[in-house]
Image (cartoon, rainbow, N blue to C red; front, side, top):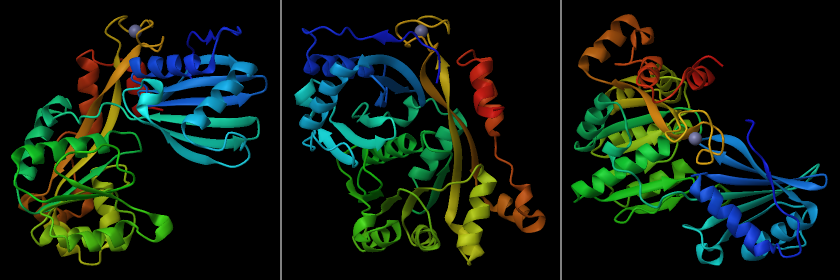
Length: 365
Ligand SMILES: [Zn+2]
């Protein structure tokens, strides 16, 4: 956790739980936080915002206030207010708290007391590709791929590296091109994009990515987004779909562009199909942007973190005949992205968009 100016909420009788909760949500929205964490520890509840991916302490609530706020959250999310020993999930309608979007609620019992996470769904519109601030080369490659009619685009990077946002921006680009039947299977759907058939996996009912993708291909999509390739079945389905006249977009856990192929070639026996289907691989991270208002010193706008907002650092690999030949002759070690990740991030650093501390946090931990 980073050191910030923690404010203590006043513990007065006039302080009603509805107002404390609404203030908290509005403050988090103003700061562009993605989540609010409330954790009972002893006699207080610690409140932290997840801001640009990192936990940032925001406030402490005295026990009496915290109890009422926790109760209020559960009431609004239609959860059992007396239930503290089992996890519960729900949703708060935005109109109940004057929020910009609905809020997902998850409670969990911990050894020090109950923990509640409020997930704020950020802006409802995915940014257009050109607003993502991707390197120009990546934008050109993405647009080229998206104008095509078949092949596979794979994104990799750790959780919270902006893969989903990039995919949503790709979908927005495709809806603007128009004229194509597009289907997604996600876990979960994070944003509704008009004009696209969006579905969710439901592992509890046996509907995993492989099963969903197999059925959805019968719905005759021209564009298919598979949230994540986690197993051989999904990998083979995605490859086959990409080879048979579908534009397929998916993600895969790997640390690098080369790592994507290392995993795929283990999951798919037909290596020739892998090399024919995959057209473009992106490996991305998000780098925090130094706060404009205070130039990194820390201010109210950035909740004393010195950062506000993030920019992507991306390396990309276009699979063409030259690369296929090179890999055939020299093996996987010959895979070198057009612009390695560190190089991309170093440019963000040189442009003064981020600072050395943030660069080191990501690349020299
Ligand atoms: Zn600031």
